[in-house]
Amino acid sequence: MTIKFGLIGGGVMGEALLSRLIALGTYQSSEVIVSEPLSSRLDFLKQQYDVAVTTDNSEVFTQVKEVVFLAVKPQVFSAIAQELASIDILNKEHSPLIISILAGVPLSQLEAAFVQLPVIRAMPNTPATVGAGITAICSGAYTNAKHHQIAQQIFSAVGEVVEVSEGLMDAVTGLSGSGPAYVALLVEALADGGVSAGLPRAIANQLALQTVLGTAKLLHETKMHPAELKDRVTSPGGTTIAGIAKLEQAGFRSALIEAVKAATERSQELGK
Ligand SMILES: NC(=O)C1=CN([C@@H]2O[C@H](COP(=O)(O)OP(=O)(O)OC[C@H]3O[C@@H](n4cnc5c(N)ncnc54)[C@H](OP(=O)(O)O)[C@@H]3O)[C@@H](O)[C@H]2O)C=CC1
Ligand SMILES: O=C(O)[C@@H]1CCC=N1
Image 1 (cartoon, helix red, strand yellow):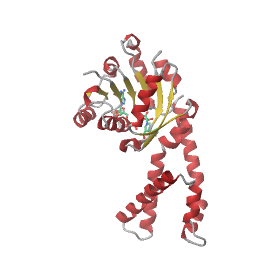
Image 2 (cartoon, rainbow, N blue to C red; image 1 turned 30 degrees about the vertical axis):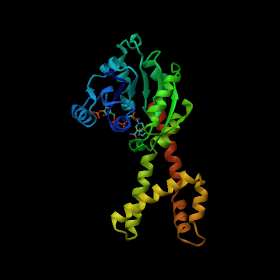
Image 3 (cartoon, rainbow, N blue to C red; image 1 turned 60 degrees about the vertical axis):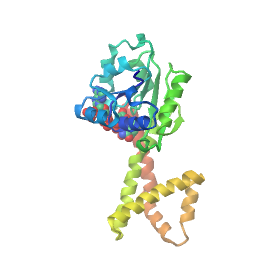
Image 4 (tube, rainbow, N blue to C red; image 1 turned 180 degrees about the vertical axis):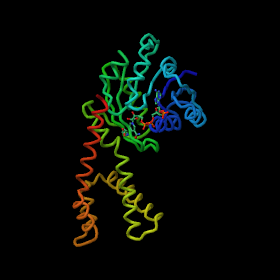
C-alpha cells in the first residue's frame, strides 16, 4: 500500500488530526506513517490507529507520496530542518506537500528548509478532535490547485477552513489557535462561580458547559450579533446587568483582548 500521509510529531494536535482523518476515511491506516521520538507514544499510536510508526523522521520523507504533516513544537523546528537537509526530497518521483501547523514559524523559514517544495502553513485548533475545529491556511510559492485541494480536504475533515494572508497567521494563532484554552478557563470559572453560589459541583459544571455550548450554537445558527444576544438576556434592573457590571469592573473584555494580543505577540516571537 502507498504511504500517502506522514505525520511528524504525534502529540496532542498531531493525534487530533490523525484520529479524524482515519475515522473519516480521508486516509486509510495503511496509508499513514507517524514519526515520534518516544517509543511508548509510538506504541500507543500504532495500537490505537493501526498506522506505521518510526522514530526516524527521514523515513517519513522518503516514504510519503502525498503529504508530510509537521506537528512538532516550533522550538524543535530548526533541529528537524537540519535533520532533513541531507535528504534529496526534490529528486523523489512525487514531491510531497508539506503542511505545517507550527505556531509562528513563517513560510519563509519553511521554504528555506524544504527548498522548492510546496508548503502550506496552517493553524487549526483542538476542537478539531471532535470535528468542530477551525483552521486558517495560507499557501507557499510552490503550491498549486491540487495542493490547495489536499489541504482543504484534510482540514475540512476536522471543521471549518478559512484562508488568510500570511501576515494574519499570528493573529489567528492568538485568537482561534489558543482560544479553546480561554474558553475552557471561562467554563471552569463559571462553574466555580456556581459552586461559590451554593450549587453542587456536578450541576455547576453541567450548567456552565451547556451555557457556553448553547450560547455558541445560538449565535452560530441565528447569526445574531453577540451584543444583541447580551441585550436580550439583560432585563432592566435584573440579574444579568448586575453580573455584567461586575465583569466590566474586573476588565473582562479588556482581559480577553489583551490575551489575544499577547498570544499573537508570542506567536510572532516563536517565528524569530
Ligand atoms: N495544542 C494546540 O492546541 C495547537 C498546537 N499547534 C501547534 O502544533 C504543534 C504541536 O503542538 P502540540 O501537539 O500541542 O505539542 P505536543 O508536544 O503534544 O506534540 C509534539 C510532538 O512532537 C514530538 N516530537 C518532539 N521532537 C520531535 C522530533 N524531533 N521529531 C518528531 N517528533 C518530535 C513530541 O514528542 P515528545 O513529547 O516525546 O517530545 C510530541 O509528541 C506546535 O507547533 C503547536 O504550535 C497548532 C494549533 C493548536
Ligand atoms: O500554545 C501554543 O503555542 C499552541 C499554538 C496554538 C495553541 N497551542
